[in-house]
Image: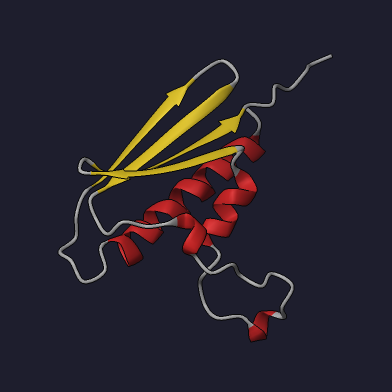
Length: 112
């Protein structure tokens, strides 16, 4: 698996779990995060389930990535980075928790 794919997956998992900890459980006792991976021949699927507040990804403010660094607020790039690095993203909320699922397609390296 290419190093770029591994980096993208680590980044997306880190950002998603950080968002759950900082925002999903805000004002609540810390809760569990369930992380699962499924590796298929052409892709990796990651599911992150938490039991915190419901989150609507479409309602999250979009960061101004064109602004100078000094003009940007601290944070706010997590969801943006997940969308930039993953190929498919799905969020579901139910009585069983909130589940963010994302897919990263594996680009095979061809050795000559």
